[in-house]
Amino acid sequence: MSDSERSGADRDPLVSVEGLRTYYASERLIGGKPVKAVDGVSFEIGRGETVGIVGESGCGKTTLGRSVLRLEDVDAGRVYFDGRDVTELGRRELKSWRQDAQMVYQNPNTAVNERMTVGQIVREPLDVHGWGTDSDRRDRVAELLETVGLEAEHYHRYPHQFSGGQRQRIGIARALAPEPEFIVLDEPVSALDVSVQAKILNLLTDLQEELNLTYMLIAHDLSVVRHVCDRVGVMYLGKLMELGPTEELFRSPSNPYTRALLSAIPHADPTVSQDRITLRGSPPSPRDPPTGCGFSTRCPFKIRPTEHDAVDEEGWTRIEEFRAVLRDRARNADGFVDGLKRRLGVDDRATPIREVRDDLFGDVSLPEAARERIDRAVATAAEEGVTEATELLDDAFGSVCETEVPDDHPTAAGRLSRCHRHRDEYEEPDEYRTDTR
Ligand SMILES: Nc1ncnc2c1ncn2[C@@H]1O[C@H](COP(=O)(O)OP(=O)(O)OP(=O)(O)O)[C@@H](O)[C@H]1O
Image (cartoon, rainbow, N blue to C red; front, side, top):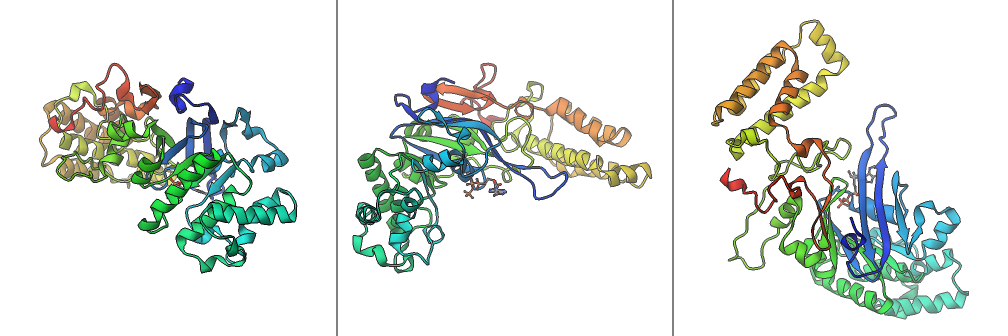
């Protein structure tokens, strides 16, 4: 991936993130799997640019923002700020760097300390960094309050005397206090009334221009991102699925996940027809993400084996469900208690698999070859075991999407998408028609 693909094509990068991974250890002492909150993320943010990070709840946006600022311990990867590797900084250097890189939080009600006055809240970072003299700090706070649209007289008031929008202005003034170059804005307007949101976004845009700031904006509200960001990164299960200039990405998303996410937004013009993509189920657990592509378990564009081309969408849905049931049983079959039950002959799972097949496939028409494979898997489960049956189904119906992690593919100048369909041997997502299958 070239620099121009990852950064705002023509800008000098201020922040470079390479292969960042942040895992949260399991609370269980033995055998617990970590939460893979951020799982190998790379991108750049150009000087003066705003890069948005979007994705469903729990996909790792906040952890990514906190990891970039080194507020979380990262497991792997590098963050460069102005060419300097900040993943290597010791405590003192880190404290000094933090003046340059700040965070504005989602909820202005919890982000500020209710017992401190507005003046104390805004000046705290200045006190921490030993900025100027006492009177310099007072003057700076008064100036900052005016910069964010409050009044210098608000210095001695308490946060509870302010509205949500005003509290967010206090949070912004505090972040601006140490004169940072870079700010991570974590859902800066999602807790605010819609009428106030635009005012805060406009303030952030004005401040960016005036103070030459660089932003990473985390949001789940796609209209906020579209309004404010130069480029957007779309996250799913700890990974960036797509990255590109905002308007291009909104107009013609490359990645199946981006398509699904955007298809949920109602079109401004209700007469324009749009295909809504309904995703099955919820995202898998980041403790146990799928092997291969993280989106493969829900992707409507999943690559299917060509020998089963004749299977229609409903047929595939049932096959995937059947495979999921068998996989689940195979996982449990590895357990000690289940193994013991099997040896004692009290394991009755072979019969239910036959029943599962009858339930799932009784009312769908499947081509003969597919039905034969399924019947063979049922027989194998009874004769050899459910693990062997699972393998048989993997051989017949498996997909590259389940076994290989897709790379970042450049799909156009300055755009990247992580999907096997961009490889030459497959149809691109926009060529693949699910409705004709
Ligand atoms: N301190 C923590 N300890 C353990 N797991 C955590 C911690 N913080 C976040 N997680 C988990 O990491 C994953 C990513 O969480 P994160 O808050 O980064 O996602 P998000 O996209 O910002 O979600 P939201 O939009 O709901 O804020 C989630 O599964 C979450 O439960």
